[in-house]
Length: 347
Image 1: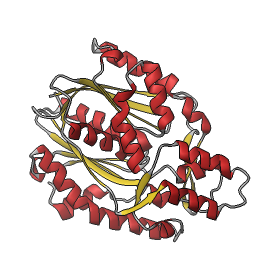
Image 2 (image 1 turned 180 degrees about the vertical axis):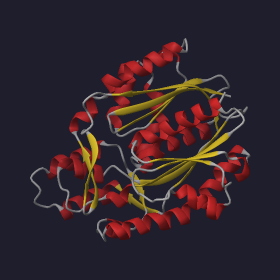
Image 3 (image 1 turned 90 degrees about the vertical axis):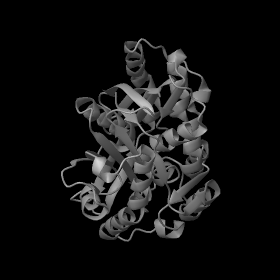
Image 4 (image 1 turned 30 degrees about the horizontal axis):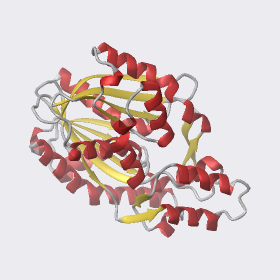
């Protein structure tokens, strides 16, 4: 059975607080007719601190798509070596024992993908399978886990390295001032994560089964408009109602394993915001305390897109209170509206 090893997370050094965010919004949009609404929504996200690649004042400027792409490349070269080395250490594997790399990122674009840079500069085998993922957005973290598990199920003697690399701050658009854009500017943060899924193992979380669900006719609720200035993030207020449509698929997967949601020992969910977690609690009928790892990740680092589920998982591993045999769900939600979820058992 595929086994998810303990994830590793890194975050850039520039920290901003909720107060920094609110002050910047007031300074940049003093005459905005719905400024107070936007500020109230930002406060209600539960995000208290975030990490950014650059200092706030530089983040608020747009030097152009080419300059931002170079910043993304520089971050890959700076942060990826240590991140990958730590993840391999957690899995007790060498680079030569990795058979595939899943690289997920929705906040920067390179071709070839950074996986080729890892082969050329970090010494990964030239024959590894390259699996770059760019368009699953926030759902890509959990999607990478389920995809890696399927790969290992087909090839039990192989191992997969997952890298989630998100620089949401490089998508900030100074000219976007609708409430959704202001909310996003106060919600998203930067971060990086890596984890190994082994074909077989005796330490970590065994990935028992996975599933996906897409809510019909919601493709414009979370999306990018691509313009001369790059990606312009679009967030529709109807997103907050999507958990009612998604949770039946999670319940079905749980029941297929002969479990019940009330018996879950852990839930690791990508938290786009606190409303998502509140609704999961209600519709799955679970203990709100199961979301403590996701809430802590959101509070301390904001929405880091595909990285957030690994941030939450790292906290789960660090707490260390789950006994062998503990059962739970790993879930992510993103554009589409798409959801991806897996059932896991602690080894």
